[in-house]
Image (cartoon, rainbow, N blue to C red; front, side):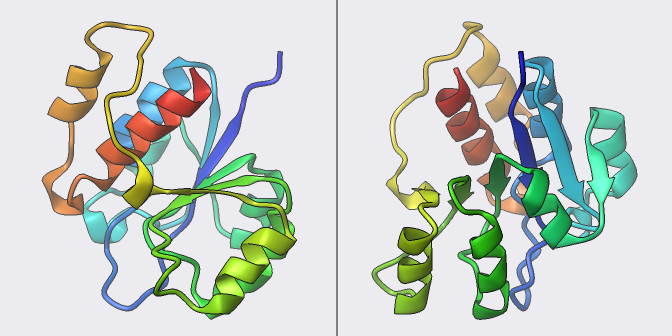
Length: 165
């Protein structure tokens, strides 16, 4: 059985220090057997070292293009910026979790998502409580929410676990 390859990229937007997956989120997804790839330095601004991710079971890779090529799901915080649009072509048929805010975004972003048939999961559209395999998993994830990242990793963990369960 092939498990999902989930990756998170380093945010390139000025002053964006959040990261799509925390080390705790990596550990939870690994517990379900998934392969996790974190771009080198992705968590530094949020207070997570590459070593933290390695200890949680992630692999560290440097090149965003190579990461996107092997990932089934890519997790970000902010919508792709124009300099990241070439990555969208490489993501054809894959899934991207991020805040999209498409009504205010560059029209080219929406067109690229459609053109490349990317399953775009917008955090701002996710609500409700996900069904979990373990009754206390939700409380475990929420209690481990890092304060420096405004709850994004908890939201991502919940959304990913909901989508993969």
